[in-house]
Length: 465
Image (cartoon, rainbow, N blue to C red; front, side, top):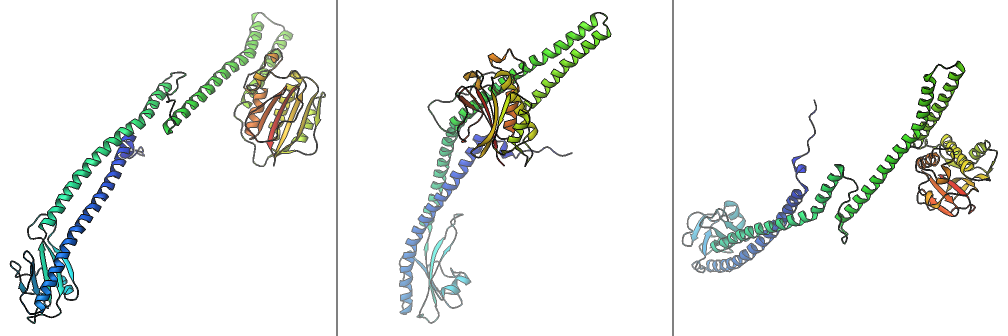
């Protein structure tokens, strides 16, 4: 059995803790780098001072030895004279015996000046020295070939150790202060996020019509996130309200044929019926079932439509001519082929819906025309009826939505909803225009509408192949 996937422990930590940890790590690296730079600069300055003193003492010692006199150095400076094998032939107080230089260092010092340290900074031990060895041009005693001068590093090492301690304490204090400030800033920055989360949890728990408390006079990333979430909540509430209304309207529309069917059957069962009466009842029930099936199919069509098959095309001019032929009172107006990308069956369906609406709710004459609008192909249906209420245009494509003037005529309010669903699936645009008022289902940069000012015009815009 596969083990459940577990996230790394680091990612389970709160964002605030991870931010502070990252900030503290970055600060630690910066402070360590700054401390190392200060330490190296101070050590360089101290070593430079010692090296200058050693150089002067080495020159004095080499000169005295070369002249054949006794070795001469300043008080506090030790020295050794080494022969060609690296053994000590002369030394200052306390330095006789073992050479201060290793065999490798002694060999190198016979050809060029050499600087070296004897003893480490840590752990603390007595006898730490700074050495400077130079080759001798001529030895007074005939044996010495290398002169070595040495000074104690006690003060230099003590200064460096004190500097290291001060840097460690200062860096730790700076890191603690910076981490505390970073923690407070991070907590303050993430407080709105936590507040948003709490309010979102209330909304998820069933609270209705709540909005996140967003500051009114700020414009940072958190504030913009709050505004975006509020817009999303408003959109979700609107979508939920539309679905609730759809369920309510659908249940109402479906209840009517079901009630009629139930009533017909109950009446038929109350007393014995003749064969002719039963046949009439069955015919009525079949008609109600047909209307119910048609309504169910229309509901499915008004839902999410799949996009057309790749490469599918249709000539809108031919389609309009064929469909208009079934309506004697409708005139088709087109000039040459008008190819468009789309599914012929579904485009035929929306044209039938538009023509049914025009003949049922509009007024003659009704015309269907096709053509080109910029880079798009269009299919347009126009009638000379009284037109739609301008306030109704924006919601005319909603499911089960009907204008007040159309409630006395047959229909379910799904015709334009089906048209809008099919056009959207084709990546097209739908324009509804009535008595000089224009409404578009989306923004587009295509040419403005060209149609008579009166009546109602529905324009479907599709991509040209």
